[in-house]
Amino acid sequence: MMATQAVAAPWPGGKRVAVVLTYDDTLVSQLDTAIPALDAAGLKGTFFLIGSKIAPEQIARWRSAAAEGHELGNHSIRHACPQANYPPAKKIDTSETYDVDTMLTEIRTMNTMLTAIDGKPQHSYATPCGQHLAGGVDYLPALRASGLARYTRAADPSERSLDPMDVPARFFPSSATGADLIAAVQDAERKGGMIVFGFHGVGGDYLSVSAEAHAQLLAYLKAHSDTIWVAPFSTVIGYATRPRA
Image: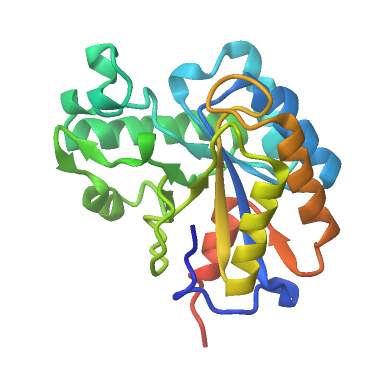
């Protein structure tokens, strides 16, 4: 959950902790519930989009979210995961059928789609299912070398030194309460580092947290803005890894 060893305090404005709110998979509940809740609280999130799930009628809404300061990130075109992660799956959607070149081509193509939506030349990336295998080969070294993404979010909560291409994140079960989410922020603040939250559905869709729990988290973050810095993924990781005098 934490990445503290390579993150020097203080955060901007003397804040004690950085909180990143990320949302995966291009879900309708993110447009209908999460983004309005973020906007009402004056907070910005990062939405990792799957190209094959972007419906034409949603493009204007994602473009509007980006214009309002939310970050759109790359979650690949088809979200290829190991067969064991979600059987049964179409063979084309399993990472076993990919190779490294195919995966990088997909990431490059998704970057182009995102640029067409938000006009930004650079996008962060989140590994599908938190893994970076293509045909059994780790593609993360090739992704590092390619320049296609400066920052990559993982999906495990391991405590480790900050690697901008393998940033840990904390996901919660659907039973999580607002108190559970807030306790994670408080723990991060005690340690003086950062926490990256990972969400899928919010009040709907799948792997969801309740809209109430999500709203309670946002209310807490807003109420404690004197000590908590909430910003999009690329903003926080860029700050944490900036050159220091």
